[in-house]
Structures are given as C-alpha cells and as structure tokens.
Length: 132
Picture (cartoon, rainbow, N blue to C red):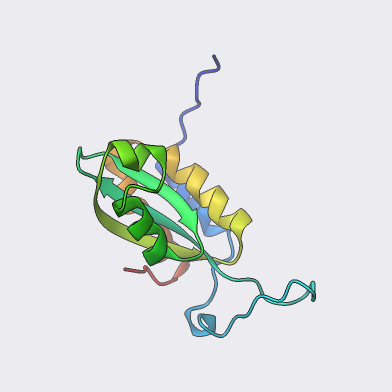
C-alpha cells in the first residue's frame, strides 16, 4: 500500500487560496439551469464536524444544514454513523463541486490538531466569509 505523503499546512492553505470562492453578495441570487451551460451553478460547501470521540469528519454538500441533520439522524456517512456528531464546527463556500472537493482533499491531509483552524485560515487568507 502506498504511503500518504505529508503536506505542510502552509502549502495547503496557499493551494486552497487559489480556488475561487463565491462572493457573499451573490449567495441566494443563484439559480441552477441545466439547459443553459453558462448559467451560474449552485454553490458547494466544505464542512467540518467534530464527533463524540473527538475526531473530525470533513465533507462537501450544497446544503450544510440538511447534510448535518442527516449525519445527526444516523443516515449520513458510515464514519459519522459509528462516531456520532457532536457539533458542526464550520463551513466554507466554493463556486463549484470541483473546488470544494479539492478543499476536502486538502483538509483530510492535515493533522488532527490542524483541521479546526483550516476553514478559518483559508477564509482569512482570501478574505472570504467563514460560515456558521
């Protein structure tokens, strides 16, 4: 099995800072129209949950509150079914699924102690809102 490579936290923040966040002023004004290729897409969010056993779960979704409630109800990811969610630590908005997935991969590469600060550090770095 291939050994995962270590990534320095400052490199992760720099890489994610290059992604394109959705300006806060545009939230709520977007509609998804699959018939028109140039139509704005629904924003995606990276979210971080702290579980009862002190571990963290990161995921992406288009509706953070609904997805968190799914985890709380025991219908979410296998990880959160085994380790019940304690609370939602925060979320970060991205323009599309691809950018959110890149951020999810980056946060999963970090050490446990670095994960809670990741969302705030990225938001501070690019001047974007930190949700929740």
